[in-house]
Length: 253
Image (cartoon, rainbow, N blue to C red; front, side):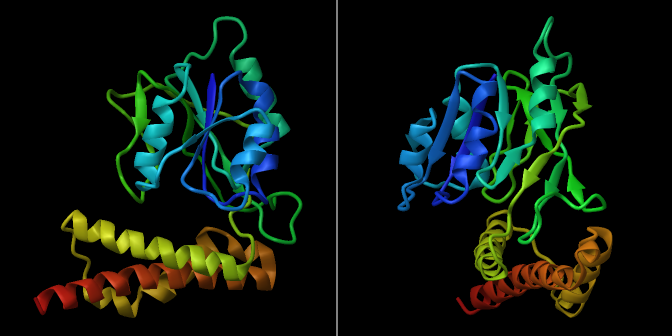
């Protein structure tokens, strides 16, 4: 099994990410898109094979990273994620004997916010495919989406161990990241020729606040959860507002 990670200026987080997976593989690939904080040196010191590749978007970068791996089984971990000891043990057990039976494995990803040491037991988790066969599936070629697509209907299974996701360095950092991501999503909508109803500008913020605070269970984090749910709602609002603005500007041409 190969492990691949895409990175950009992750010197403060990459050590924990690599240390959690380096004993799982003899082929640890880090694809860097131009870090200026010493991320590459840290990764190399920890045993990773570091490759520079200019940033083409999330999906294309992961597709490039896939092609740099030596093995058919691939595990993808992001630079702000840490494989838990339970998941690492589960993956080791999976490759003993006859090896994995499925084409891909969904892995629960649990958020850990600033001020928390462990995921909240009632916190929200996603479970995308992160461990998969390269000859059966690949990341989609989308600049804003990074899911694995299988050419034929796959046999999937779900692992019990979790990836710990440290996506938020601080509320300010989260705002900057979400602002940039909203720009990329607005551009993606334009490229695909997709038009969203402008009237949604009235409901986008309140509905997405409820989505984050209630359905994604940010409420379990108390007052801090109100702040993170607000950031999520504002990101969704910005995506739509920038999409609407692009259409207005296009109509002037």
